[in-house]
Length: 265
Image (cartoon, rainbow, N blue to C red):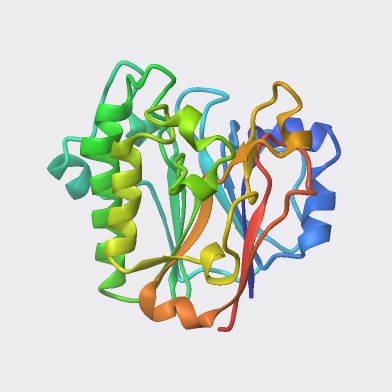
């Protein structure tokens, strides 16, 4: 079973470029997880034959949003985080809006696991959203994953907006303390691992030079000056099911590239 995740940075833009169908054909995924769809379902130019679509769009038009396209019907689908966790962690309005209204998660339940796709809030260049992310969003999201794990293993994927280690970005020293590489963001990622989640890419590939996002400036992608901020994490007791974890840097259309895992299920 192949699962693919892609921060598509606007599904309509990728469709207009004629790059969405080739992406599906190239990877032939059983499940496609998308972030930053920036659209509602009815605005998508075409349905991909053979997939059911589950969308969680932001209230703000043309912003954020996640979706899962799946060949097999899930047992259940949940949009967003549970209200009880939102209340517990006081996760609500800030200067940029309410993350609960931004279409940031979709959860699909399958026989063997839960699949959660997430678009984690960006800390912003001036770090003005770092406090909410560090103190509210990240703890609430981990609590949600742990709640799901009580029933069955969890696969979580998407744009987590953090580079975990110096090997996960091309210029670590120059970016210490900047959005995506602050101590606070990296600490929360460490807490995911401490809770038992496994970074699947690092099961197969070590070292630097493996990135999933590149700036649109200074020919960063051509020079491979990037960041690895898109991940597939799995529950520790599910890691033995992962047969491959890949970054597909050759597939174009977004400032992010698709990533995938292959599962034995």
